[in-house]
Length: 122
Length: 232
Image 1 (spheres, chains in turn orange, red):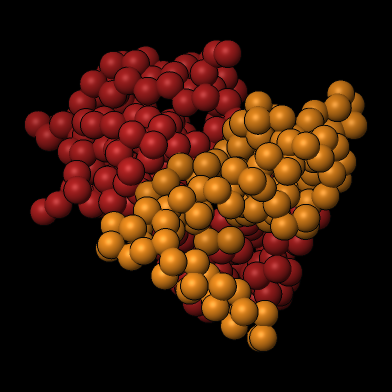
Image 2 (cartoon, chains in turn cyan, green):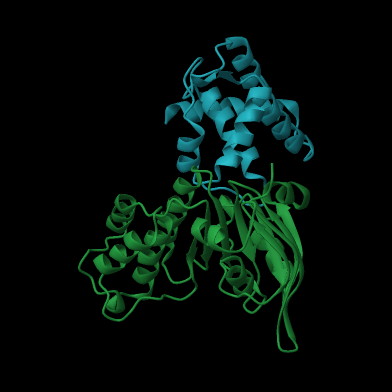
């Protein structure tokens, strides 16, 4: 992963985790790699990884189990909320951008439908 | 927790020229700290004082609870900015010397690192390329299980691919609660591994901060901040 060094790296690690949880790459109750392994994988300072994991715990996306390490939450509701929130943010920015250019709802919907249709042909 | 390295009111002059001016710094245990400044800003002088190589200075330095001396020297593994091998030495000779000199030298680890850098036991050090020499020296220094590692320009002479291996090496070592101080001016390549950075300018400390906080506050990379501060 290539980091943008203009933004705190722990924030980018949190985003990466969220995307992996949303995509299902990290499934409910999956064990999270150790801080050491994650730091090596990301090529960053272990304290940075630690900070990202603490935040993920605060969001209840990751759970720390004493003596056995960290796990992705087993609570599917939390994962679904994360997914909804993620999609909602993307859609909102997209709509705001297009409406700012006076593009109508009908046009937006037509293009989305066409885009989805074209995408599924690939 | 008590700082690993505590510097207060440190000044150093050569004749009338002041190289370090009232330096106050605390370096935390287990942190990777970048010491950043242009050539001639005082980085190497500061490092040499910490390593006990320059003994005339004003101010107070406490390392791991002790003044500079036998204890501090025994816990610091130092990579100087220039190679220091004798002309006749082969890789195995230098490794032998490190085995004899340092109780904390892990020869297996050193061999592992050499293997990674494709450095063979029978190579003559003086015929190595600049980059290979640096990699070899780094293998020796990083193989010490020392509480403090001080690296003066560790990636200056190596290609970008080798830089990544070197950064990996530094990172994998840092899990052992080592405090690592790295002086460099190649910031973009290395800033992702720092906990904090110190900017030094004409012997004055102009910044001493946590890197993630800096990024958060300024929306800039450490490299960018450095370029802004040290524009000629």
